[in-house]
Image (cartoon, rainbow, N blue to C red; front, side, top):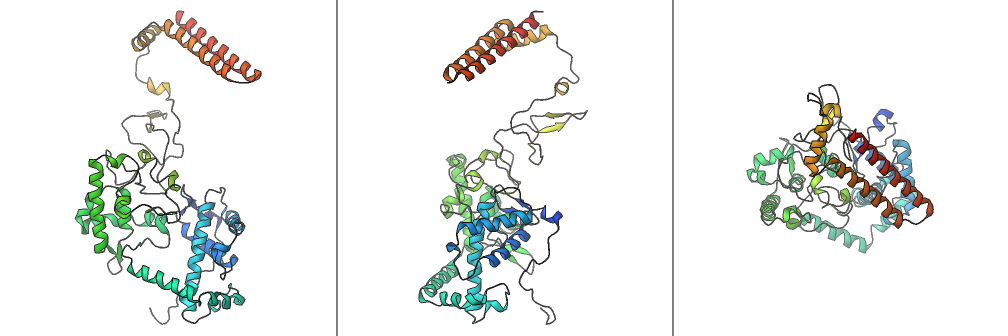
Length: 421
């Protein structure tokens, strides 16, 4: 760095963010900020946190109301219409505040400096109290144990400040580089295993390439071996665990590997080992078995309760569903509960069927006369309505179900009359 080049100072967020950029803020279904404005939002939130929460008080000592006020300020400024991200941002605030206090200790207290000279918004009256907290023997012993544990850690996470969400948005190109350098990794198909390894890849600044430590390479070999074992004994598709859990260990409380260190396995996506059959991954093969924890991309995965055929445009603009086409996940109007195709599309180019053809078709399908079929439908409808009415308390509801029964009778008789004509 040249002598004339100034080092970047503390972020202040003194300028207002344009409304068109504020509207670009997005959240994952777990409440994590994502997209192009995620880091800007976190910076804004962090500065508000440091200004509103006294640094000499541990984050665990602040009441919930203080975090609620901070969230309301964020909702107003960033035009957020939902409270869905509130719980995640509360956890994130506590973690960020704790890291902030740690930074004040390592960068200032240990170096005999006063942070109030650097950060104008810190209250000078509390600095001596903060220094006293960090000078007692109990704190120093705790700090020494944490430092020793960190130095002995070989499983170092390298996803950066933006966490897993930002890492996945920016670093999908890491996997091809790792496979080219370590060919054995190409046999790993489980997306969560892949992201686990990518999140521990170390970037070589001179070449912008990535490499793994020997310790992480051994983990990769174990992940491949366990994945094959789980496929052989069919436990891979039972949706109870995955190769990562079996190799590294069970998830810790309030943490979900490759997803977030602030969301527990029972909360993320409604449960880490749920909705497996609706999971998707860009690298997955069409017929590849899916494992319950294979959450490869938080912000882009859609879980639909009903599997539907995709929509395609017909020759005259109508939308019809096909059977063989791959599902489309990026449309705003994705159907979630059934689909009724346009009959003009279904019958386009085909000969019209007369009523005799319809009757014959129904007879072939149901094995009986169409009149018998409608009669059966009539009696079944009446039976269902009367049974429901009998189980329902209240005279008004009884009349409502009786009306439904009459409607069913009328519909069946009308249909039968039309067919006889």
